[in-house]
Every structure is written in structure tokens, then in C-alpha cells.
Length: 185
Length: 250
Image (cartoon, rainbow over all chains, first blue to last red; front, side, top):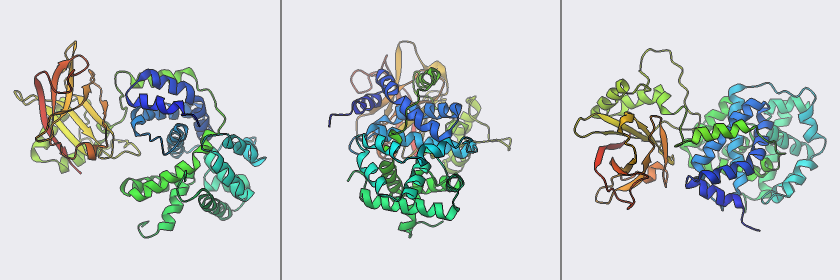
């Protein structure tokens, strides 16, 4: 496995190298914008999230630890957290008039899993997601990718809240058992 | 919610926090627990790492060019925080309660001198606390020893890798020279903390370690006048202009 060029870019950012930061942005912003957009679902909000996150990445590049996670994983965590904070603040209604969100995941768990498998550190997770019951997997993918809360999940999946909560809880427990107690181990 | 003796519940909430299903006030409350509980924070990080590859598998969407322009503006010169402790009334209040008489006196002076420092009155005032950052723990007010006039305020959160520097009087910046900030550990050579950005705005300097580690034994800070870009030798070469005690408040 070749060295991830993003590691070097992050290291340069930690030294306040602006050119490296621009490179990092060029190479990662589309992916991270995709992540933010799917959760907050409004372009203007997603743009603000992205801005905040890159400022944070710039300021905290020195905190990145190579052995712990791939750079993209680390950055995506920052974007997801910020996006979920925005959801809390703006509390937007889930806009899914055409059932687009539910279709994307519900129709076929394979799409996102296949994409996941191709990633440097995604294969094990994809394997473990496949091991889950279909409903558990669907609930977890929807919650993760689309930022759906328990009650939103219940609405979308047309199942009682308690049932959905159980799927999520059991799915997560199984994932953990499958992946090992510590990530990457 | 007492999580101390419920490791199973801890694990579950950590997982749901990372997944995103822990929401609203519960999420914020959990974040506060995390700030005080390293085990909990580690459990969340483990879960974030487990799940995060899924995020990297999301279909990319090109953001508009204005996003990068805005980011560039925000990191121009030095990283500038839009809503730091300067907008946080609670910070000033807590500080007033915690500070020693002298520090409180200096701060009172700053409240009058700095146009951006909020006055403690009038009462109804919306204060936005950065959601996941504690107010600053370490604080220094650097003064001109001759006039006793406060010139800079330096602060950091205890677990933060950033040191925030606010220039109270922009006139202290001299063309073609730099002001360099130094930690003064007792019995040791001064350690450079970086060059103070020539700006009225608050600017961040990066620390090599979290403030609690970096400043465990630093009772005072100083600013010296150096060639543009900072001292070429790693030790102060110019006159020391401003100094002040560096205190940990809570």
C-alpha cells in the first residue's frame, strides 16, 4: 500500500503551508462537500459547514495521527460532526419529497458498500456491514449517510420507533463485534 | 444521566453519537461528558474511526468556488476566529470570579480599552459559546513595564493546541519588524511561541502540544522585538517589550 499523499499534505498544513492546504482542499473538498450536503441537505448550510471544517482542518492539522486513521477518515469525521451540529441548530425538516433518500439506500445496500470496499480502510467495514441483517444495515446506513435521527428513521422505514432503535442498537453491537474491539485491529 | 458505572450504556451512547442518532440536547450533553471523561472521548473516537470510512464512500459533489475564497479569507494572515471568547460574556464573568485582584483589575482595564470586549451590562445579551470548546483556561495580559498599560492578551483552552493572541493596541506593530511571543519557564531559556500577527484581530498560534502540557511550567510570557519573521536564532535577540504573568484559571 503506497503512502497516502494526503498525509504529507496534512503534515505541511501543520507547518502552516498554504500551498499544501490549497492542494488538500482541491483533492478532498468534493468528497467532503458530498458528505456535508447529504446530511444537512441545503447547499448554503453545507457550504458553511465545509468552510468551518477546512478552517478547523487547517488549525488542527498537527493533531492528525497517521497510524490511527486515513486522512480522509479523519477529515470526514470532522465534517460529519459539524454537519450534525448544524442539524441540531437549524433543525430542518427532512426534505425527501420524492423519497429520494430512502430509495438511494433502501433499494440496494450494494452501492455504498461496493464503494466502501474499494477504500483503503473500508473493506473490513463493508464486510461487517454485509454480515448485518438487511434492516439493521439499512437503518445504520441511513442514519450515517443522511443524518436521520431515530424518529426520522422510523418515519422513513414505516416502522415503530422502538423497533428502529433496536435495529440500530443491535446493528452497532454486531458491527463492533465483527470489527474487533478497537478500530483497525 | 450518570454514566460512570454504566460502561455498557457508555458504549452505546458513544456509538450513537458517532453514528449521529444521538441528537439535539442529548448530543450536547454527551459532548460535555466527553470533554470531562477521557474514556468516553476515546470510545467515541473509536466509533468514529470504525464508521468514518463510510463517509469517504459518499458520492463527491464539487463545492462552488466561493467556498474556497471564503476559507482563504478566513486564514489570511493568521487564522482568525469569528466567535471566540471575546464574544462570550460567560468567559468574562467567570474570569472576574476566578481571577486574582490584580488580574481582575487588569481585565477591568481591558474592558474599557478594548473596543471589542463586551461590557458586563446590560443584561439581555445573546452569547454564543463555541459548541465544543471550553472557555479559555490559560490567560496572560502582557503590559508595557514602564506605563503598565496592557498591550496584548494571550489565552488558551486547557486541551487546545491553539494559543489566541489579541493585540489591544495595533500601534505596537512596527513595519519590517516582528513581535515574537515567548514562554518563560523558570531556570530555562525562553521558548518561542511564534510571531504575533500584525493585526487587530485575534489570531491563533499553534502549540506543539495541548496547552496543559505546553504550559505546565510557564508562569510568565514575554514579547520581544525581532527582525521580520521572528528571531533568526531561536532565542530573543531584540528588546523585551511586554511581559505578564501567565495564569491557569480553572
